[in-house]
Image (cartoon, rainbow, N blue to C red; front, side):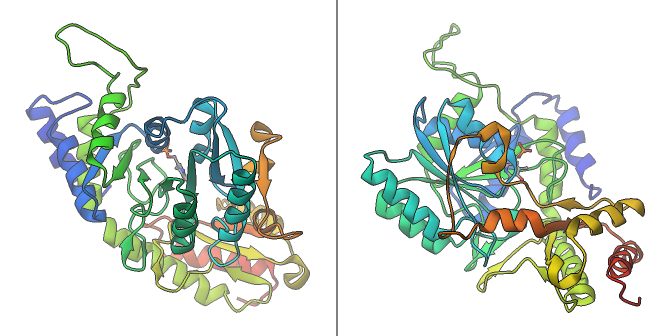
Amino acid sequence: MSGNELIYINDAFESNWIAPLGPNVDAFEREIANYVGVSEAVAVSSGTAAIHLALSLLEVKKGDKVFCSTLTFVASANPILYQGAEPVFIDSEPDTWNMSPQALKRALQESFNEGIIPKAVIVVNLYGQSAKMDEIVSICNQYDVPIIEDAAESLGSTYKDKASGTFGKFGVFSFNGNKIITTSSGGMLVSDEKELLNKARFLATQAKDPAPHYQHSTVGFNYRMSNILAGIGRAQLEVLEERVLARRLIFERYKHELGSIPGIKFMPELSNTNSNRWLTALTIDEKIAGISKDYVLNSLADENIEARPVWKPLHMQPLFEGARFYLHSENINISEHLFTTGMCLPSGSNITDGDQMRIINCIKDCLKISV
Ligand SMILES: *Cc1c(COP(=O)(O)O)cnc(C)c1O
């Protein structure tokens, strides 16, 4: 927390707006919309809820196909299953670790030839790094398929000076406890299409028809954000830029200390993009470094340092067994390679220099590099 959260929480208490609506919710929506440069934002209970609402607005139904990046957290794709639709997973490419435009193109061509057009493409910006949006937007436009940009991890990042989360028909942010700014739990759906987002508000509040009695003609959800949590979000948004700078500095320090070790490669940053570096991620090539990423993870754990492997690709998850998956190119599986070799280092905005050096030295120790 930054300190100012209590001011906004007090406002909520003093005005007795203890509900999933109120002045903090309205203000937080406006502030996020202004920050990323879209006309409308809807505050919801989680990033997952925002993705689910986007799919509902696109009328994704049972039997429909929805394409999705494979290298991501399960929440990107779970709402596809909520709608009874079928996920098709798209491999990563090496420059951003995100959705491979050439794999996406092949998948769309094949679907088109089979007479099936997917209802949406969910593009994820992994660990803060934007996907190759120019290429992806152009391919999706060619087939007239709407994009949902899962920017849960990339709030504060930019692609060619435009805010992450503003490239699709819908953008999604998360304020879960682990994200760069948090409301403890929460999310935001953004778009330039006001009417659709008004419908999102309707769906997110149990789809109450305009009638004095309780009348319902469509399925709704209870997905709105609490006015108390929106107060936390307003204060957090004030420190977002600071957080991005802090995380980028943490990344730079890791890279400065470890980047020249043979076999270690840091997650790249595409030119003309600015990643919030939500998590510092790297790969370890065992053949060159002499040790595996699992060895490093275990050594860090022995020192009570929590590091993690990168997300396990969704096409490898038992939950999605049998789902179609499109490789970056024939015989080149980028996401599985990243999963086998990749890990994330502790990257909290408030990590101390001393703690970061302890982590760095532990990794150097593993690699038998004199500290
Ligand atoms: C965190 C996250 C989500 C889900 O957000 P919640 O607010 O936790 O529901 C979705 N996609 C990605 C890529 C995430 O990292």
